[in-house]
Image: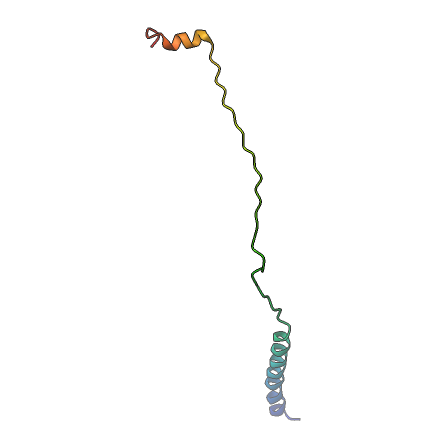
Length: 71
């Protein structure tokens, strides 16, 4: 074979290899499907909230706040 014939076959083999590789890879792509569920989403919240606020003030401090001379 002469050199011109070899130079013709190299790009041809590269092109064929590329086409075959892309064909093989496209057959392996995974399929992802997203569907809505048939049942509605149900959220049960059984929460009991209790809070208590306690304020304790000594009688002496309460008298100081009531006294106008302090401020």
